[in-house]
Image 1 (cartoon, rainbow, N blue to C red):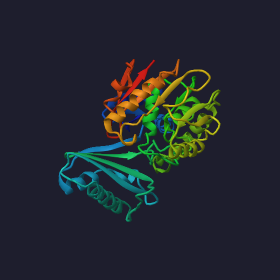
Image 2: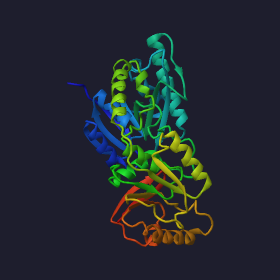
Image 3: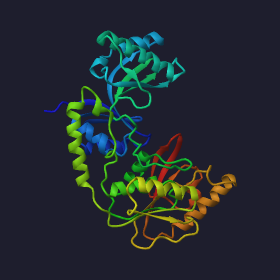
Image 4: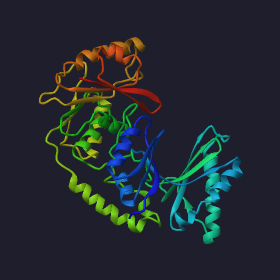
Length: 378
């Protein structure tokens, strides 16, 4: 029987239920939602499947230990107890990232430095020399979280965060995270069997994520994962990943319809064009210059209209009164999309009443620091 390891996958606040559902589909066990992520048990092949296929996870962390750490000396002593020699060799590089919550320390760099010192000193005693630190592209990324005096230390199996799919070449103001866009689509039960359109597409994240879901494209297919180079994982991880990548390629399909990305802003249109090409979707996505308040619905079959309307800072002058007027006009125009399901991420408290229609479902999500609601309409 394959050995299952305890792991923690981080997620954007509000998307944890969708991540838990994903993990279950990958064969993971003992899945438990937590704030900001999901804890689970998985064998190596399941771990690699999560890295390759998860659309919701931001990071996949392998916990090394939890400690009480008081003061700078406490940080050093706690980190010294971890058997780093099992994970870091003289041929690998490493870096430490720290986050703090209600801690006596005020600078993440200081906490990371003390942990780094402990790692270096332990490995020097073990090997007679020390590995190099690489803050930009390390082989092993150590993640430290200090809440009050409780220190947790983990390794990041993926390296770069999983929301970095590789297609975002150009962005617009307040871009939507790829993982949040995927969660929005999952919340709408988008299966990829129906048309999809975003009439306020910005840099195109929702349409690109929808297209990849529809064509069954693994979001991590073209990227390398940090654990492929770990001394403890590399021998078995590489052949497993090769098999999983071949399996993912064979599972892809050609779309029978085009997804529609619309915007009227020049910067947004330039961004979505570059990003769609980078995502390999030149023929799958139709890009149109159109003002959502002055354009007709697309011809052909109805499907899912999904979008992230402006919250206030991108609409120009007019303040809250101008925003309400825009939301009211938007409600009238989108109701012309007869037969389409509508899903909108509302980040302005005035949106729902000004939009003028009662949603059939709502879901609380966080777009960065902004509390939002995904409102779904028939």
